[in-house]
Length: 127
Image (cartoon, rainbow, N blue to C red):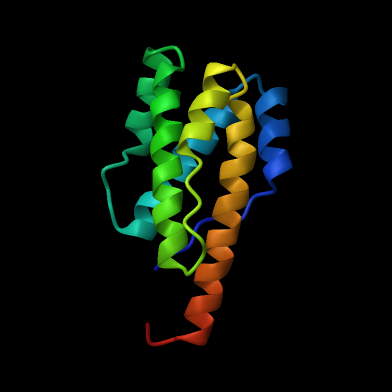
């Protein structure tokens, strides 16, 4: 199982603001890729996620955030963490125009998942 990259959540927000959202598109791409690889599910196409976000003027990102919330909850269970599902919170933040905050919450959750997966792999090298 390949784990994703640990990122500082506050920097995800900062880089997204400084780059006028361009970094956030990169973030969507990388997180989509990392989740797909980690779960062994390739129904996320990172390029398609970016294209749909751009074509829909960001509306697709609401759906993406919702799905990421569901996927993070699944991944939490896989690595032995509580199944925290923030998908509705992500939608609410998107609807309030605060969607960039989702990157903070998502990356914090992903960092915990990557750490737990790494710890589990170290404790169970055959699994």
